[in-house]
Length: 71
Image (spheres, helix red, strand yellow):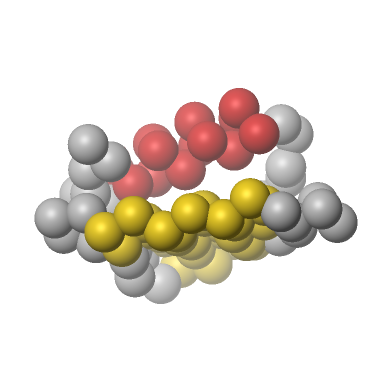
């Protein structure tokens, strides 16, 4: 398991990967990716996990699009 929580200036960033391949990336209340679901500003959609790299890229894009900043 990998788990990290970072307090940023405008949000709390949470990243968690479990040994059973479940995951959760959350940027405050704006963006959350969790086990095949993607939620951006309250709107939920399915998310097809392809790789950790793609997950990170998609998450970062949505954070920026929602007005957030990862540093």
